[in-house]
Image 1 (spheres, rainbow, N blue to C red):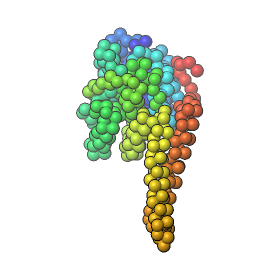
Image 2: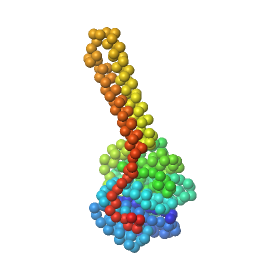
Image 3: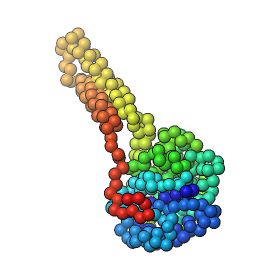
Image 4: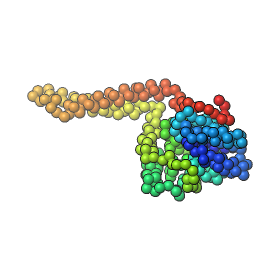
Length: 315
């Protein structure tokens, strides 16, 4: 199979028929063998019924329905597990991503040898104040932190080599940082393509301000996991040891001062409390490192989702 198209969705019943028809038209024109994986992330409208109706008339359409809303990362992760194509392309279901970009993205992976290609919506139709400006700030921080020179980390339109999506785990809200996950997994050839951003035709935006707060927190998480996910003691042990040494050496200084001048009141000195607190913090960090090592070595599968139903896929 040439292409698997993974589409996470939440309450997008209006756009699905038109989107699937458009995709079919594009891939049929270029002679691709393909599948479309529609991941219903706990929709409360008739999205799943619409998926079933479309699949009844098109064997290329497959679906996964979550019991409840788990988030975009969970939907992508399940889609990546099920995908069979040599190239996996992700896009949003709201039709702001154009299926006409599929052939060019496929070519960049197969012919130009990219491991991953991220879309860049250079011209957007979103509200500049509430979305574009925060997005530019977020992407600038992500570029500086990760060293990956992409203009739009959060663009839903991306293409991947099959090997890449089978090697990474997307959890929490880490869908924004799949390029970083790919880099940490050893996939270095990450490209970018300017793609069309279309005005919203159906439904309402799922955008919220919490997305940016969570985005920056997740960036810290992904950078930490990339460096210390398999060796947490190197982080907690280092800072725990430094903190304990600062407190211990301060305590030695205070004890020696007390012997030299017995009239000094130790509890009246700020250094006494600094020494006490830093030693306690140091011990806590060190113990946290031990616990983190135990968790890292005994963690079971992180992504466990309650899937209510599958369509066209193995049970």
